[in-house]
Length: 391
Image (cartoon, rainbow, N blue to C red; front, side, top):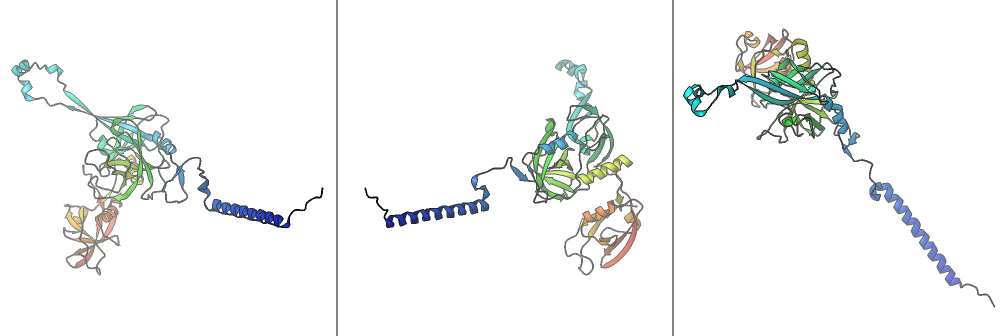
């Protein structure tokens, strides 16, 4: 049998086909590698746990979607506060008539002489010595204050001091092995930072709600004399007053103080006193029994833009009233004067003026630059201690 030789035309066709297929495979692999390098998520891979940005100002900062660690850090130091007030009841004068009492079957021994009203709120253990920060409106006029810790322990608290001007109060409890909250070292809050509100809404017991910082430096709300509130949409309800507003690491950033609401419940506008202000108030109350602030005895108001020529001053505040025999009155400041400078610094709004004066110690002197009519003059007043005005 004679062997047959393969046809040269068929052999070349097979070689060309094999070369074409090999090139196609190589090109496809190269394209796949480039696509994976560009879009590594195309395979549908997922991280072990979801992550969310904390909004701390550091673009690299992230944390698990659960804030359990932050809550465990802060919650043991947040306490429930129950205040009680006992007062005499007022009897209807008609019940004093013996005929009416007999007719209606009213027996005086069943009419209580006293009544007890309870109010629920929250507080924050600031240190292991047992000092608790809360709101003044919660404990004002209370006859009895009971504090309940997260671990179930209960005890009576005594009032160390109050500061109605910031609606803060300091209590003291006597227990061993007390937890304390960690205060933030970074006072700069950014709009959008995640925050948690921990407190005792409606007396339910310790409750945590979550939101963000909606605004900072809220003023002129008529809630307290000195206002510099953190605004948050974390749900704050009656009973949250005096509780903690913490960041996503569990550090205290504020003491929950008030809500803006038409119904009395949370509508996404909660207000907290910044932690550094609350801490300063607490320290002064512990050391002196009250908060010491400077005072000139004036009432300052905004003035319309353009009231003062720019070549005289960039702005000023109107002296609307002067307290008789106060430091301003002593040096001849009059209602209608415009303060354009304090301590050699330009003044443009009342909050700036009040802050500068209240930060001074009684007995210090302050240079005041004023505009009366079109005359600019200066005087020096001795700052006094601000009297306590009950709200």
